[in-house]
Image (cartoon, rainbow, N blue to C red):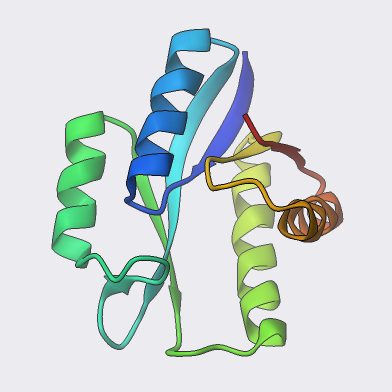
Length: 125
């Protein structure tokens, strides 16, 4: 099985995608990666509180990795912090990064380009 990072937003699309990925047994999900607003301690994407995020990860049984970001980071800051995190996770064995959000061609291209820079492959089930 390919070792992977699962990009977890805390929402229904992430939950459904993770369920499908775990059913397929093609990827070993090493961690749930979630970006968090450092100031407010909420998931960047949905505003879910970090306390609930921890409960989600605990109930799923997959380690949580939080990427704490400043409020409203510019793209340079976001890309730099995410790249550092991805490179660290790659050093720990990850080869793939899985996304469960709604498919948009430009977003997929952006993610594939950033993942390529970090030496990872994207998975978009």
